[in-house]
Image (cartoon, rainbow, N blue to C red; front, side, top):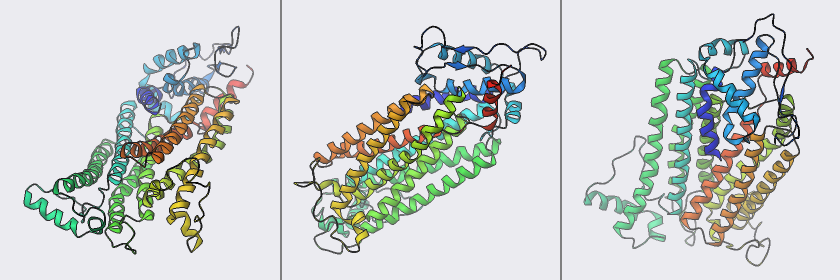
Length: 483
């Protein structure tokens, strides 16, 4: 679902930028035509929550802008909407506006809509593709990091250089790296007797994760500098992307800070060496922040205004937005709690569901002192928290879906909420399966990918539920006035 929406947005980014203002097609003295309503013929089977598509009169510049602004977001979501007369209206509107690209600059200035990209729709499309590509890169980097952790490869490289390093190429170099690893607590307590070939596997996993992250820096910085030189980037967009780039650079330092904690001797001889769950959660949280920031910015570039069609749809979106924002917070908190599950190896305990062993709540959930440590370091408590948060997430998304069914709003937004509910159910199923099967690498990485996919859908949903620009709201008010 998320890939369909992103593709539709990219295909129609040009239409949206060029449709900010449409010249009036009728003389100023011509009388305003009647306000037609699409889909309000005999019967109410159009599937748009009743009322259909209200077309405002083309009286003056405001009315012209209203027509363009209202239908461009429709076209961006065309692949999600039912194929009714409204879809035909949208396609005709985008065809007309695509021929008027020369009026884009004046339209943006007159409408008061703040674009993040200058120099026209081609620049908007290029930056949109670049940012969506960077978001996909971060997504793959998070999944690769999860596989590295699940295969216990993260502690195979016992040093770190900011600029990177050349991997071993000779047998002597491999033996030297292997000797360094043999001095680590993980080798002594977990992998004692490991062969050189096995060491090469975990080394290449960690090396690939590090170099994939460094490559992202070049993929981000190169086009960013080019777009700045071409004058495509506004001051606001430049500051936002600079902050994301700085956070990406700090992410490498955070990653080494995390790995370094796993190279220290455990406090007890009965504890396996592993990275600090606090540092792992920090590393994962910063990755999520970078991903969400890039994705939100990409959506803002290709869709400056949210999809709207009538004032009733705007009001419906406002009602759902009040529910969607806290649900997004619950989804994010649940994802971060998974980092503490991984950091404490809590997935290898209580491999049963719905009970945890023979009880619903283990007896040692509050056995640590001080009390707050139980929520971050106690294996039983950490897994119980994750179960509760996952269930809360599923119920919250289901509540959001039920509320959306009763509200008149854009059909594409309703479809997106339905997809989010399906993804939430799938994610819970993946989590339970991963637990019951003792965390295999395939299911564990799929579960992590599911968490990021669910978070992506919530970001997309929250973005489409934004309040429209003041000019667009005024055009609705003007259309509602009697002629």
